[in-house]
Every structure is written in C-alpha cells, then in structure tokens.
Image 1 (cartoon, rainbow, N blue to C red):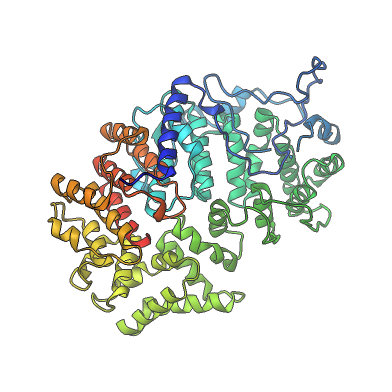
Image 2 (image 1 turned 120 degrees about the vertical axis):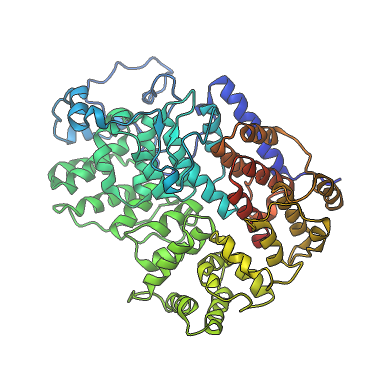
Length: 608
C-alpha cells in the first residue's frame, strides 16, 4: 500500500493544531510571521510623556508592546529597526514639540460623520458583484481557528485557480467571525494576501476599515500594504495614528517623510539625523526615507548605497520602487512570491521591470490573462524595452491579429517555444488568442496546449469546441471532460481507462481519477475499482479531511477555499497527493463552487 508523503501529515497537523489553539483562545501567540520590514522598525517610538521609573533588576529593558483591544489577539511583529530601544533614537528632542491632540471623539465626528461610518461586523472591499464570495463565506467558523490557518499557510500555491479563489475569499465583504475583532481579522486577511503577492487586494482590505477602528495589528499590516504597492504617501494619513497606537519607531520615520512631502523639510531633517546618529536599522533604511523626503523639496541630495544590506524588506523594496532606486539582484528575498507579485503590479516601476516579474505572477494567479496581455501590449510602444521583450510583444500581437489562422497559430507556437522558466505563463498569455483559432487549427500536443490555454482563463465553453479536434486519451481530451460545464452525468469506466496522459503518465492518471471522482463523474463502484488499481487512497481520513467535510456540510465557501489552500502546500502539482485533490474538488462542488472545482481539476493535468 502506498504511504502518504510528509506533506499530508503537515496539512492534517496544521488543522489539528488550529483546532486546539481556537479552543484554547491563544491563536495569536502561535508562530507569528517573520517581519518583512527592516530590523528595528518595530521598536516603540519615543513617548511624549515623562519616562517611567527604572524597571526592577532583571526586568526587560524594552517596554511592552501596545496591547491589542480587549478580547483580540496581540498584534504580530510585522515591523521590526534593530534592538535599539526607541527612547535612544532621540527623535522627540529633535522634532518640534507637537501640540496636544484634540479630543478623539470630537475629531472622529468631524472627520467622518456617524452615518458614514462602517461597522466592524462586516468588513471587506468586494462583494459577489465584484467577483468576491458572499458575506457568509466563513459561516459559523471560529475566527481564531481561521486566523491560525491564514497565519501558517505557505502562500506560494501550486494552483493558479486555487490562489484566485483564495483571493476572492480573503477580499470579500464578509461577516466578522466569532471570537475576533473585525479590524484584526481584516489584518490577518491582508497579511496573507501580501504574502501571496496580492498587494492591491491587501491594501483594499486594509482600507475597508475606518481609521478610527484601526488596531495595532492593522496599523502594522497597513504599513506593509502601502509599501508593497510602492506608495509611501499612503502612510501619511495613518502616520500619527500609527505612532500613537503602536509606539513604533518606523512610524516616526514615516512622519518625517510625510512632513517633508508636505513641504516641511526643516522638521524632517533632525529626525533623520537622530536615526543616523543612533544607527537605528541599516544606513540604507534611512537613506531611502530621505530619498522619499527629497521628493517634497528642500531635503539634501541622497545617494543610496546598499553595502551591508543582506536582505530585501518591504520597507526597502517599497521606498526604492517609489523613488526609482535600483535594488541589487543578489539581495535575499528579491525573487520571493510576494515580491514578484508586488513588482508585477507596481505602477511606479518601468514596464520592462514589471514584465520581468509578470510571468511568475500570472502563473500564481496574481495577474489575469487579460492583465498579462495588456502589460505586454504596452511594451510595444515602450522605447526602452529590451529586444527580447519587444519580440515577445510583437509575437503576441501576431497571435491575436495575424492575417489568417495559420499565421496566428504560428505566432502562438513561437510564444510557447520561447517560454523560458515559466511555460504555464505563456499558456495563460495565449488564452484568448487560442480561443480565436478555429477548432483543429493546431493538432496533437499543440491542440492539448490550446485547450489548456483556454481553460487557464476560464473559457470552458469555448474550449469545448475542440472536443472533436483532440486525440482521445490525450491531455486535451481529459481536460475537456473534466471542465465540461454542461455534463454532470457519470462517465463509463472505459473513458477513465482510455486516458494515457503525457509526461508523468502514472501521476496524471491518478489526478484524472481524483478530478472525476471529486466532480461526481464516476459511480461509486468505478471510483473504488480505479482507486484500488491506481493506488489512490480516496477513503483516507485525518484532521484535514474532517475539517474540510465540516466546512462543506455547513456551506462555508471561504473556509473550504482556505482549507483547500492548506492542502496544496507544495512546490508544484507533483507534490499534491491525488487523494487530497479528490477531497478539495468534492468539497468545492458541495458548496456551490463547481466551476472552480472543474478548473482546478483540469489545471492539475495541464501542469503536473
């Protein structure tokens, strides 16, 4: 009997741990995410009040972090400038004394009328009309349990369609689950979106909460979201509140940048000098902040030197992208899934830089097929685009607008042949070009790839035109069976047995079985017969399958999407066990996400 790889135990263990943590009510204290900001930017900012009495001998020198709201988990350490206590930065003495803050209640009433305020009971930027899931996506699931799953999820999913579905769940305008604060739950959702490379969606989630309801955790994630979108100006409306709520020195530096951007460079200079004098963080962190401040005029000329910098952080990446400073290629983390997605969607970056990351981002679902085509289409008019990139853009134009079907097909083949390290991205890029070809314009393996291209963009009905043009038993034939939106009847066992697959044929046959069984396209008898023949343990149960079954029985689309992502924590499709694919597809179909289930099942054959 085949044994399960360790990854299956990892998913089950994660579910079991999440359940225990939710019961105990200590979710936020488990495996907090690693900071993506410079060391030291999480240190509390200087207090305006007199310093407290010296702590007893043996007590920690650093003040405790600002407490979260009652009943809410503590804020994760997303921002960290080194272990220099913020009191030693000296920014309070360097900056002019601030006037006493106005009454918070009166200010909130003036800034945002009561009728315009949004409740924390329902939080999120998008509804079903914008493509997101519905408000009851997480149903009755315990919020602490969901937060643990989000916090521990490896965001680099092997499935493009699973990542798209997860984004639709995380960005949805949903009812806040029990046992969590709505702002903190939004922070967890945005933090996972940032790790997925979905900077724009993460920022939209953050901004769906009124500033008066921000918690320390949400302030932390909001800073990361503004940096991930290469928009340091987005920190300015939050800088004062972030400094008060979190006491972090990073917000002090943000206030200096924002003051300079508003034309008050004189107030910013002593703060920058204090950070340099006390050596808070690395020199590059303060230099980049001064570079941003220089946009407002009046600041000194700044040359950014990266010497001594060992890793790329959100602070460094965001400020560099906003000011046009080139980031060294050898910095650790520069090719992470998160940064790749940020780079592909960062408006300040030149097209050539964005296109360099666009293929990887499209494979992961960050960019749609249409967005990828638009990006390459804009390259044609760019004067500074590299020759190879221009050639790809020209081939793309021919693939869509060639004089005849043969010319378009030849251009599509050239794009596929020149795919480099991201062959599936070229499949996504040519989705609608393939849909414009008459059925049978390409044959054999090219026909299979044309079907995969159309399905990568969800063009399932268009792809069905090719049913008579693909080879029976081939990949395209199997993908069309799995993706058929109009055929829900079981197929005979002979159809399953006819699939030979290409590449790793044995794995693809198991995935084909898993997809058909999960979609209800095989009878129970045929499922058991094929599972025994192929060694797929469809009946295996563990903590993950039980959690998935409960979420499906309760109709929780968002919870099912999240648990499906937990089951896909692998480098590629070869690491996703077929029996787990069966469970995911079955659960998605059960909660009304049959279209997504079909696309995921077909994608498994296209990419395995």
